[in-house]
Length: 98
Image 1: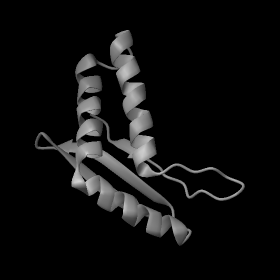
Image 2: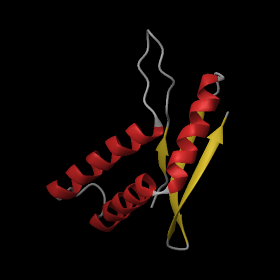
Image 3: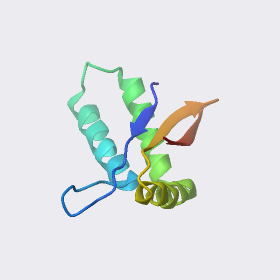
């Protein structure tokens, strides 16, 4: 499975942003719609794995920590990305700051 990349943005008066949680929920909804449609683009196994990774991320304690940490970096004007991928069958969440 390719990593799921979430690129949060800091909200300003002029530009609406989205936090990691909102982006993960949006990606989860997109994945669910594709699963329900029976999309041929991605294998159903990969879609199911993406769905599982997003659900476990949203339920995890790490999600709250990453949300707080990413908001702190965003408020400092830094670019933040969260990658969600599997290692040894378990989801791994990685925060990248540029």
